[in-house]
Image (cartoon, rainbow, N blue to C red; front, side):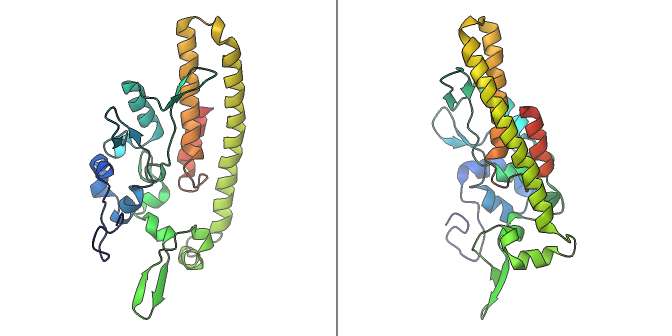
Length: 233
């Protein structure tokens, strides 16, 4: 139902809150991607406890814009028990990472999520899109389609993922050290300095978490992943 409504031959964005947040993305991104994006997006619960997205259209679909939105409304998911920082918990912003901000190369070329994750298969009734969703690296059909442009797609993807995960791990250790230092100094700081230090924790952890929870380990948009890790660092 999420993907097709009541008509299995058609695609439908059935998530109302997400559809309302798409704005210009509803006209400029493939419907196949929107259908996937309605589950694979960054969201929060607003003051009325209604599921919402922190943007309206493509311009707001990057980590910096979302963080500015959350800051503007004073939103937090939780408060860190050691630093007192009002933290945010990123969800799984695959759609925004691919189509928002500086779009990925795949998005700029007009590809959708389905092109990589739903390989074409054929049976006695003809060709259809596989619903066994998996990494394109695990799909010989997709790898064959991509081989015309990518001579070693798996090698490219593994290299992107290693660079991103190595940085994620290094920055996570930096964040832990920052938490420990701020916790130790917290009671001695004046209110303005403490608030600034807590904001640094909030922002660094959100940029890091945004990349870490995006699930592709940087493969969906390596440039965006590194840009966000730069900001976290």
